[in-house]
Image (cartoon, rainbow, N blue to C red; front, top):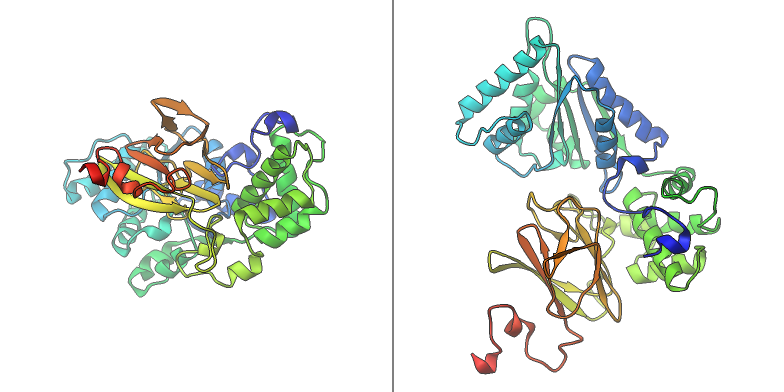
Length: 415
């Protein structure tokens, strides 16, 4: 990687949320203050929304690092669940093993736990990330939990964080009672040009740049033009530009490297992409999206397999593919063993590289945990209970269909 060349101690633009890299713009500082207010008020109920990549999860992680020891916290990230699954997940966070309990037992156990914590002088906080995926039934359970109280106070503080459609759900007629209990709502917008420049410099300084200038002043206008001030897109473009500089053996990023990165990512300017946003699926913000017509030829494929079954297939074109648990990834693997943003595939005209994004459980090739690995045709990458099988179409040109040589199969002429 480029750490030695740029004299850095850490990768400055990783996609995985890392509280130490949090840049508190005015709006991020305000959102964090709203989160902190849940501790101050006994009826604290706060909703934080923001587009994909706006920094909600990093903000939550930063907030949690500063929570005092007498705060009991349940943090829920898996939100495409039933009401019973949700209640069980909350109890698991509080140290229970509730999987044989019926719904009535789950609710009674939670209520008793909350009252006991209040009596012991401890505050209890429930944080739900990706809350836009919660069903109306689960949100109704959240309302009921928010109503648990003693004769004096509410006993549960709640933070819901999610994409903008969360507000649409909360404003539904069926949830009017829940909406009335929300103390504060805040929407995280994109960074301004000034904040974006400070954001980039902050991350570089945390990574060890000291007072060295790594990005030329004239690059910031181009970065803003193509990212619109969205933190995740800024990270992707800056990281790709630094890789381009590394390939040119340069310890300095100028407009040439930004242009190279934009061409590799096949991005158009942010305004154009934002005008094509699809409600509920902000495809224009996904870095590796490819145009429907005139796109480069497929150079490979990745097959997702679990328990011996292929459950998904994704064609690979030159660019970058983000793999992770949540729906904003290019390749989603909905498993508790997979991190929110687990790894990325960097596909060039000559090769494909897989890189761990500081995931919890890592990636494994040939039973060895790796950080970054060049993939050869047929390589199998293990992620939790899933396998990613890399198929290089360039290496297989003139051969039989890639499905003929999957593990456990034979070429068609030998079947």
